[in-house]
Structure formats: structure tokens, C-alpha cells
Image (cartoon, rainbow, N blue to C red; front, side, top):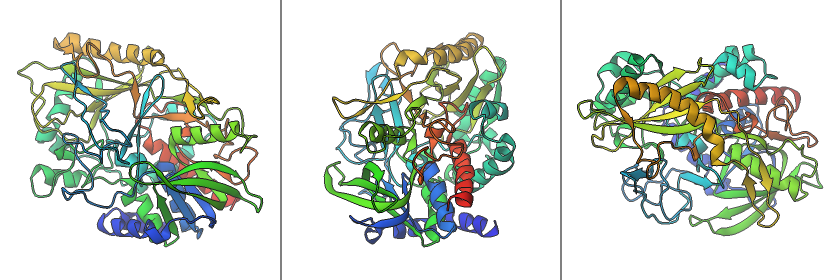
Length: 530
């Protein structure tokens, strides 16, 4: 335990972490056609990063495959990532225009033209929803707001009844928080910080309207943010850097779990490779086929490697799509019927309110949320609403929220034989329960504060951002599509380790839950399978 904590603490420091990860993802470390590896992890997000660390600490050489880039090289502006106000090709995954979650202002589309490139944020569009996902070594940790929230204990017991709750809250959630580098804001500093005026305004109005608020822990280094506010270090959270990556201050996975795995000397990361097939190998284990792509998305090589064990950690969408395709194409024909089922959007819906001109939210807004409205106890429509920033660099009198609700609706992934693609059955109308729950809260706040909704930020005359999600969950539900520890039934040596295990909802931002569940599962797998 001591060694684990020491390695993780060292990795969080940043500079050595970058060097360690660069070595693990160097060109010479990339997988070659015909290679044989003991363990292959598909994806470098939360579940994959946990898996890689614990495998390498157990002495197992581990190869990771990531479809996105290793974000280690600065652009012409001297920074690795671009900011939200000046998006360029680094912002989006293989798009020629941006697709911002808040893509309108005064009802006018404000998205910008960009060069097609393997950028850091993917807006993957299905028939009824856009799903935002991180692309790069570190997955979603590169592009989220860093809110590290542990779900309500009783709700966790409802969503994953086969998991021992006591062990999660006594062991695995604390382990995940330590590994992620979670820290709490200085609440006294929060009360006077210019960059959190927007949050204080929403908090005070929520309280005056009868609602409870709570501080949110984060993986962003709040000590660094204090220095940003004082202008003694380069700004990141205070420089409109959020959804396209943070250049400073954020403890993303490349600086924590992945750096610690790299420090063992047993990790290799093969970036810009898209896995297209997994099938049993004649020599034992599994053959994994992948396309190497360039920054335009074009395939430049196809490789097949053999792995004794394969860990699927490509995220709820990526893992579900791959497994559904493998079953339909006869490559893994005996996968359970539950694979592809139980997908949900964590009840996500966005909304904004217009403040009175005398009630300013501040020109300087931290990109890292620090507070939420907690109305989860309302049985008529539970809501946990993150008080989100609108870091436009100027005063706009806008209060923005990402509401997480208890939407019971679910969808399924299916293979489309005519197109060869995997579709998602979710339709926008399925988000009506989320709108209804959020409306109960914000109607009351608007009534009490004599304010109104902004109806110009998600389209023309559109109040609710109901066609997008930051929190895709489900598709390979634990103890349904897999056994109780993520093993895929009928295929020894195949495991699912990511958010696809969680049935559509956590009631809060989900990455701490994904991390803790992966910690639980890999501990069991190491003890019994390897």
C-alpha cells in the first residue's frame, strides 16, 4: 500500500508524469503486426487506466491501445490544448466545424470552422443524441470539468445491487479518490474569489428558493487555481480551458494512474490505433485487429496482435459498439444477449437562466465547477444540478446548469447490417423525464428570483439542452452482460472495465464510480484469474 501511494503521489506532480508517459507511448513502444502480449487494454480512460496500473504493479507487461493522440506536443501557440474561445483543429475529433454543447447565442449558431484533425473532444451523433467523449491518452479525463463526486450510498445500492456497498464506500471509493488526486476547495477562498462569483450567485438564489447546495471535490489542483487568481502562474481553469483540455492544473489520468503505471516500466501505449476486431486466436488468447490512423483519420496501416487477455475499456459507447459488432459479425458469437442493452445518459439535461442586470455573474469564471444544487431527495423528481461556468471572458449575466436526473429510460446498441455501423436506439423524446425533473427545480428558482430561462443557447427558442450527454453509461451491465466482476460470459480472458458496466445512471458525475468499480473488479481478477 505504501509503495502504491508513493508512486501515485509522485505521478501527480506533473513534470515527471509527462516524461514517464512519453516514454511509454514512444514510437518504439507501439505495437507491431504479429506481436504477442500478456495483457491488452483497449482504451486509456478511467477503467483502462486503473486496469493498466494494477496489472503492471502485479508484474504483468501491459499494452494499451488508444484511438486518440498522446497529447504531449505543443502547438504553434506553445500550448498543447486550445481554449474554448479560440477553438482550432485540436478541439474536435475529425470534424470541420465545432459542435459546442452551448452552440448558440441569441439563437444564432456560433460554432466555427476548423481543420479536420484527430482533436481531443468527440461529439458522436446518433439518431437522438450527441455523446461527448474524450479522445486521447487519458480519455474523458482530458475534457471533463473534473467534478469528483461519490454517489449517494442508497442510490448506488439500487443501481448495482450485486456489488457489496460497504466495500465500495470503505475501500474502493477512497482508493479511487486517492489515485485520482481528488482535492477539496478552500471554502473561505471560494467566498471571495472573483472566479466563483457565478457559483455564489446561483448558490444564494437556490438557497433563497428552498434548495440545498453542496461543494464538489475536483481533480483540478485548487492550490494552483489560487495562484491563477493571483496571476502568479499561467492560467488554465481561469483561461477558458475546459472541454478542449487543460494545459495546467488538472490532474487528468495521464498525470496520475497512467503515469504511475508507466513508472513500473511495464506499460506501453499505442496511440492513434482504432481496434476493429477481437476474436479467439488459434494459438490461444485473442487476436486483436486495429487500424493505425493519421491526424486526418485516414488508415495508414492495419495490424493484428495476439493477447492472452483483453480488457475492454473504450468507454460506454466504444466498448458496447465493438462488442455488439463482434457478436453480429460472428467473431464473438456467444456473447450474451444483454451486451448492448441498458444504455442511459445519466439523466443529463442542460439549462440556463438570465440574471438581472444588477446581479452580475462575473467576467472571470473558473472552468472547474465547485458547487451543485442537491435536490436528490425529492421523490417526485430527483435532481443533482452542477452549477456550471459560462467562461466567455466577459459579463453575460448567465447562470448555466448541468442537471443530472433519475431518468428511467434506457436504450440499446444494435448492429446495422446495411451500413455496417452500430446504432443507438435512444430518441430525444426519452429525455422528457429529465426535463420535467429539472423544470420543477428551476421553475421554482425563477419564480422566487423573478428571473427567466435563456431560450437562445441550445437553439432558437429552445430552453432545454436535451439532445446531448457528457455521461454515457451502460451497454454491458455488470452481472448481466458480464459476471459480477466484468468477465464476459463464455470467453475466458475477456473483461469489461469501464462505464458500460453501470446501468445508465449514477445520480452524480460518474467518473469516480467508474474508477472505484474498476479498482474492485481488477483486484478480484488479479487474485483469481492471473
